[in-house]
Length: 317
Image (tube, rainbow, N blue to C red):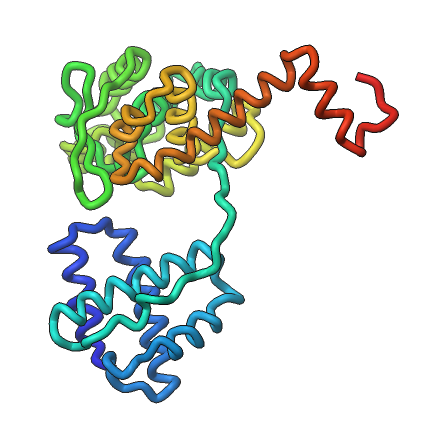
């Protein structure tokens, strides 16, 4: 196969479309899997691939790819052939008429406000505790993605606002709540000192990243894996059940804000969603919450629903 066009396509995604590193990695995996299929099937040129070839290739992926992953795979192939058409390497898009199986929309997990409060009240005033509290507060205060928090710099925060670089390096400015500002101020007061276990404060300061808002105990910009591990640590410490991860704090931020304000457009802007349909999933969460409140509070609703539930027959409220 003409492999150099895969690299040119990925460069196009990076330089012209400014897609995120993670999206480009996913597209690379998808296109390389197609390339392996073509080589195994004796297809030596991209313009020789037909729709029926793609169907066979997609069918072979169904055992190991979820419906959502298949949809992404097809999207990658469509984009790749759109690029090949533009460059004159192909005259048709074999993926144009194909569709992956639909999957039911999975609602994102969230924490309720009591769980969030418990998670944020770490009560640890040591170096790690102050840093982690500031990260947790910022996640929940401003609905940041993990990559946005890790990529935040000291100069990004000014007068209660933070500038973040989202997907495709698109910048947006977000408000930071009072509690988060207080937690960040406490963290910044100890940031340059290093931890109690740092053997040499001078060595730590020499390695300290001058720009990063959050750093590891070695002075480097904190890594996504480190942030995930610290959230797991505080989840266990604060006795919060479930698999709490950074994106769950973002989901909780969006759900709680929408529940209180009802302003879907504002939540879309704060989250940095290009398409409001992405944000609309939180309206389902909000409705789910309202339905639970109704079911528990209305004097007749609860009895009516239980009457039709065969598992509750013969039981008393």
